[in-house]
Length: 247
Image 1 (cartoon, rainbow, N blue to C red):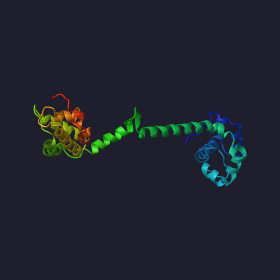
Image 2 (cartoon, one colour):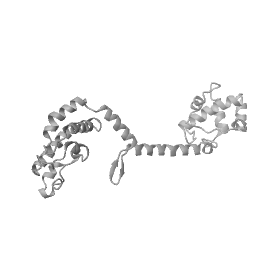
Image 3 (cartoon, rainbow, N blue to C red):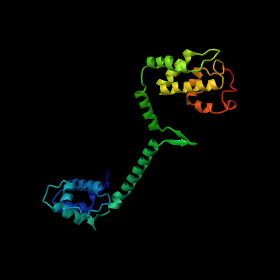
Image 4 (cartoon, rainbow, N blue to C red):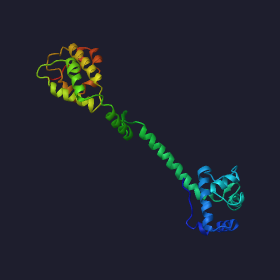
């Protein structure tokens, strides 16, 4: 908590009078006053000392002299109607600025934590992107060898066969990269390969060059993001790959 102290505070007449009453030097008296002002700023931001005990004021000042003397003289010299004289001038602007800063920081935190949208689409924020990077490092789930094994034993047999070259090696690289780098779940890729196979069976594309090469399906067209079962429910004329060029 900050408090505002004028550069010429040691020349203030009230402070000189207060120091004389206490029998202390101005410099020593300022030490007690600054401690007191600091605690008031911390506990009574409006400068209102109503209800504050004398013992509390002296504890705030770390006063070790005659009990009750400091609090009594402090209120006599610096307090009117329970409020420290000139407190709003001394601390008011600072408190207002602190309130604005708190509000701004709170809004910044909310804007960082909340997803932003552009044209209705969610855009990851800086903090969310950082969290995602950390999660990627923590959740790669298995080694490259394990993902390669699942590709060979589960994904590749499920993917529809085609003529004109299948590119298994390139497909395997694309599959492993999606799982390790992009954290796409292995089970999702396998499930979508099965759905795409059903789609191609319905469209009578299996064994033809109209089946997308697996590497392109994984990487370029991102076929694993499509709903192939829904496509199967439409007529053959509506199937999106019906008029596709051989690949």
